[in-house]
Length: 192
View 1 (cartoon, rainbow, N blue to C red):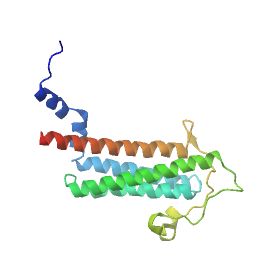
View 2 (cartoon, rainbow, N blue to C red):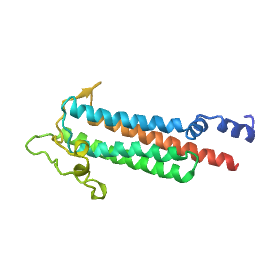
View 3 (cartoon, one colour):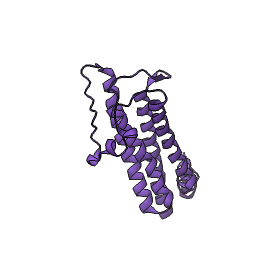
View 4 (cartoon, helix red, strand yellow):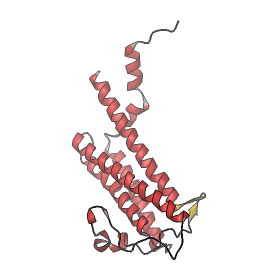
């Protein structure tokens, strides 16, 4: 006969779980500085590819740059007050929106790579950003597409740039889900 579990020991195991540890990390500003640093690193890499390696960004590339910029802004909102629910929800919303937008564009870019033809490229040199923001006019060095969609000469560990960005945006989404689940779990534990 299986021994009955003590409800108190179950709650103790949940309190000592990795999700509880992750929830604790979310109250630390250093956690959000690390997220900001990862997104800043990605933006610097994009600019390095463009201005050092002379790989011109396509329309989908600049959309992904915007997504990463949103991912840079999200932790800056949370860092104002990591324990304040309004800042955290706003930051999570930006985080998820940026990661989903970037993932959508990276997947579309993979399709462009598969069907690349320099004569029929469906790229636009006048991108349409969310809310019709003319980011290519405000910050052309960052958001003006000058390359063709689907042109790709770069790989790392057999993955091209779009495939890497699918992986990266997926990791950001997985991290967001983990943080939200740990926060909800911690809230439920406090109520019990």
